[in-house]
Amino acid sequence: MGTPYADPVTSSPRVALVTLGCARNEVDSEELAGRLAADGWELVDDAADADAVLVNTCGFVEAAKKDSIDTLIAAADQRDSGSRTQAVVAVGCLAERYGEQLAAELPEADAVLGFDDYADISNRLRRIVAGEPHVPHTPSDRRKLLPISPTERAVGAPEPRSGPRVLRRRLDSSPVAPLKIASGCDRRCSFCAIPSFRGSFVSRRPTDVLEEAAWLASQGVRELVLVSENSTSYGKDLGDLRLLESVLPVLAGVDGISRLRVSYLQPAEMRTTLIEAIAGTEGVADYFDLSFQHASPTVLRRMRRFGGTDDFLALLESVRAASPAAGVRSNVIVGFPGETEADLAELAAFLESARLDAVGVFGYSDEDGTEAVGHEGKLSDGEIRARVEHITTLAEELTSQRAEDRIGEQVVVLIESIDDGVGRERVVEGRAAHQGPEVDGSVTVHAVAVGVAVGDMVTAVVVASSGVDLVAEVAG
Image (cartoon, rainbow, N blue to C red; front, side):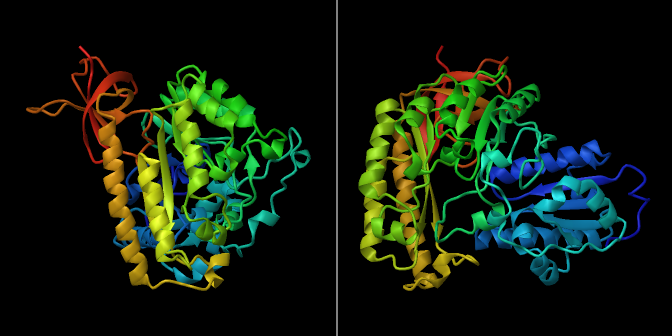
């Protein structure tokens, strides 16, 4: 615990939230913030000004785990240096996944809370700040805890969840916000531990999603990014495999929303009707976030995934037939156990043919509790690093070429920042429909009218590129 301070429990306690990981974690943090604010907590940006620092951790891969632990330790160091902070608390995926083990191995954290603590987060935090010990949970496979039958989720009944869904408070003023449409995953990829700590796939009811979309629009949000572990599965547990196609035009029609974007699409579950809905619905970005992971059928089967080069190229052909200028991004894993030089060459050849706008390249690492940990044919760390470097270099060259291909193209840019620095040119930056937030590059727009503000949509023509970033000019 930190040094004594004016009684934080009885006089407007302050909390700072630090969010790591994906957009789904961002939603969880804003839901936690909503609950805390509703119960009298003051939200502050600077951890040094907070009585409690809540670190929403990521537990997906080793690098993310390390980042989470480093962040917790840094917050604890600040607490021990005499700041206002009384407690550093771990929440999120790493906390849920390891529970009592994390608490034992990371004494710098004052408490480790799991998803089941979220509903009563305020009382939990008040007791921790007051110095009461918290007994961390023993992790369990959450797939066994969540009902997947819609009959077990009757109207009015408590809905299984990994976090609150009633309250939300925005933690920034960005015109873009993630909107969670489902939690959990029913797939069993051999490298992924997410289902074990996020649980089985559970869709949110369309009415709840629509209500939250309208609230976000009232908070100044202009672009909604639909997130889940697998958006293509949305509605299957509610008895409608094509529910996403029905929901997209309704969400895109919410007053105040200028653009809707779908993320986390599973290639094996893509269907013609969904491609048409994304490409043909006004207000929905022509953007396809397809998680290919590899291109070699042999490697993909060991990953317990479907498809391969031919299937994926056919899928991309269908996407571009529906929308020639569509943006496509993907992630790939290299160095998976048993991956041969021929497998790597097939991945490279696929990327050369695919013309993707953005590619995330990750090196394989063992994840606790996954099937791949027991696979034979493990590659050395050095070999994995070399393969990552090779594919990353190739991907950067190819995505740069793809961006260059867009010169002369007309794009609609959502303005996200305007810098009117004294003594230099005004810098207006945003993203086109083919660019997802934070990961896919941006567009710098020239010749923008003085009255344009953050959140506006501006039509411009691409005149140059640098890597995946574009430069565009508003037509005179």
